[in-house]
Length: 353
Image (cartoon, rainbow, N blue to C red; front, top):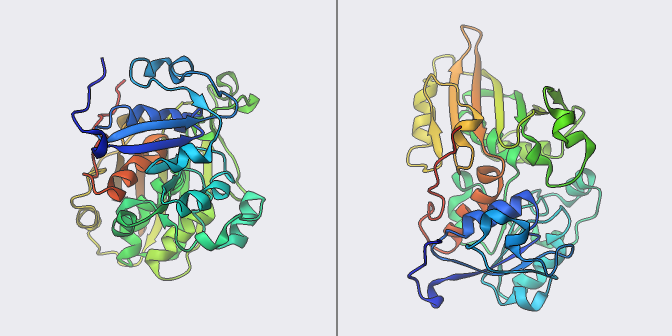
């Protein structure tokens, strides 16, 4: 049986979820179902309207007694916070009205991640519906923007690849310890990163016992990563980013390469000092983090090493793309926005095997 909250109704955060039928939405529901301060009021889906959540997601039976409904701005406006777990281009059409009515918004898609509307249009193939909000939106990577998230009314939840890559490179760039003109991110993702849809190229019979790169000429997460890295390097960065699809369901592994500007830098100390006190960063000195060690957990595991006497530093960064790369990070942002302990509802350990 689910644990019953002892909080009064006035203590609970009334939550709406738009688009709760995908993998990210399912993960958000799983986390919020056990969150002691969350009260899910409405879950919308045009395609599954009228269907009970438990019927679509049997693992939530006994924990969420709601049905999917058609999107209703009135019902969403009665919430304290609305999560958008929708395709790119959806949140930007609804967020302005909700914000005007005093509702806070966390978008798990890319609508508010990029500052330049022209860059958005180039990579996402549509004009931005509310470019006036791009400057206000807070990029929701707490390890970068914790103070700003606390006071935000609109949070752009980061992409999964950008989370792993940014957290991996961040200490080196902040300390000016590497050459920003030569950065390489070789990243791999499980199939759930592409969403919950029927696509031949994502069937396990198609990707099993295989491994391939994709979007080699340019991936839409590249400008998001570059935007993050330039914020902390203070100069233009030259990033080569190549994503790969691997035959697993969850997880991202990013192997990052850079040239050291200071060969004498103490890499492990640099990372330990930058991430001291971070609940969701686990440094593994001399280790080799693997994706299964973070599966189901809101955690980024990082190892950093120098490769012989080449002057090249190698960083390994792993996350669960659906948790720290999406829904878990969104709840981490929610906790900050409502003055809660940042770890609340996110204490789950990784699953093994």
